[in-house]
Amino acid sequence: MPELPDNSFDEARRWLANVEDDLHAMRAVARDPESPGRMVCFLSHLVVEKALKATLIDAGMPFQKTHNLLVLHDSCVGLGRLVELDRQLLASCNPWAVDGRYADDLAEADAELANRLAGLAEHVVAEVQRELGAERGRQ
Image (cartoon, rainbow, N blue to C red; front, top):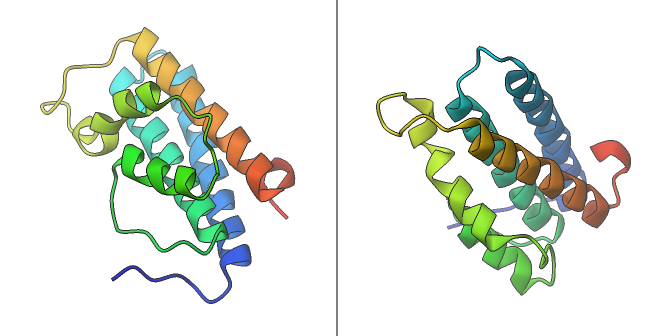
């Protein structure tokens, strides 16, 4: 059964601060020409997943443990939040939740896909910051 912390306002902002740390890591990996594209995709998924969960925590909405971005986004949309996110991009990011961790599991991501998913992560974080009213993700 899903549970939420007692203080969803503070917890959501704690999650968002963690999301920003992951976003910094994603940017560093994306800038490194030696880094594999699959790692950018994996970190992009991580950032988006945590940002969606921060939104749900802020709303006081329990959620199941899942890496599925579409399921998490559906819950956000049900609350009238983050309704404008590109579901097609979310769907293209989904496979990188687990598969991107291991080079054998998924074909290497090309630079175009890695850049698209990194852009998605940037956009989602900006939208969640706006939704949570958090200046630069921290209060």
